[in-house]
Each structure stands twice: as structure tokens, then as C-alpha cells.
Length: 238
Image 1 (cartoon, rainbow, N blue to C red):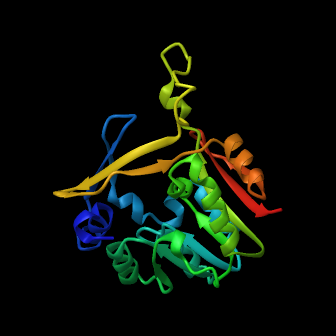
Image 2 (cartoon, one colour):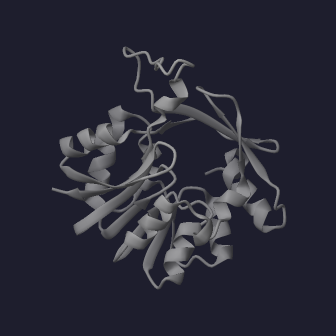
């Protein structure tokens, strides 16, 4: 990823260089601008949400941490004596992980990872399924997961049902049923004068995930619900 268009990577680099109050501005097509404190990407295991703690505890064997970011999940697994490979497309974020002590870093687009390598656990936290971008691309997503999983391997993934964002004051849901799925969001991030490119990101409710999982040869088990419309699921090949 070009450093000029990589606000997240640059913000993480500034953070470990001393800018502890660094913040990333997140724009979307469904809500007002939001602010992501970069400190959140460097949280310890004890600071993580319960769903993430559960997923990390369940991770076993050879683990692929997809969208590893600043490497907090990978570091915890590594410190727990687990074999983990941190996959991240941002060159700057990979540099940050290296400085933090992450050992096995794979700087590459997830969809271009070599399928000769197999993993017992594929970990996609912080709504990692978002890289599928939209429901129309879930077939491609599941095909790649299937190619990377070892026999009896599993995908651990969390996501959210964001229909609450479309609730009216009376509790009714204002969704265009003839439009695209309400969980398909367009984002843009910027940090200081570094502006990222617009990108699509998918949030998916558990029932729809189960539908697409089964459609593509996977069995889905919901492990736990979070505190705010989020959940953790485990998917295995049927």
C-alpha cells in the first residue's frame, strides 16, 4: 500500500514514535464522521472486547491473522507460544509490527496469498469479513478461505448487524429493500494530510452469514454475542 495513501499505517507509525494522542478520521456514506483513537489498535489482551479474547483463546495450530494492523492480536498469540502469521497489506503497518516484535509477517493482499500454505485457524477480527466488500463477492471470499484452510481447520470471525443505524425514533427500520444490503458501507480514512482511497467494507448479520456460509460449503456456529449487535462465529468446511 502506497505510504501517501495509507493513513492507518502512518498513524500507527506516529503512535509508536510517541504521538500517543494520534487519531484517524473515518468518513462513511451512512453516518457522520467518526474518530478512531490509534491507541485502540495497540490494546493489550486485557483491554480487548470479550469476543476478541474468546477468538484468540480458541485459535490453535498454525494461525493466519488476517488484516493484522498494528499486530496486537498476533503479538498476544505469539506470546502465548502459538504459531501465528500476521497478514497485512499496508507496508507501513508491517513495519510497525516488525518494530513491536511480531515474527512472522506476510505483507500481501489476502486474496493473493499462496494457496500452497494451509492454516488450522484463520482469524478475522474487528469485522475482518469486511474485506469481502459486498455480499456479491462472498463466493470469492469463501473460495479463498477454503483454499487456505487445513483439513479440519476453522475460520473465526466477528461482525455486527448494523441495522440499528437505520432505526427511526419509533423503532421502525428505514431500509430500502430494493437497494443493496444495508451492511455494505463505503469508507474513507484520513490522518493529518494523508487521505486514503474510498473502499467498500461489509458488515453482515449472523443469519445472512449463515446463509452464505452454507451456500458455499461451510457450517457456521455462533460462538457468542457481543454487547452491541456484534457476534463471534466459527466456520468449518462441511
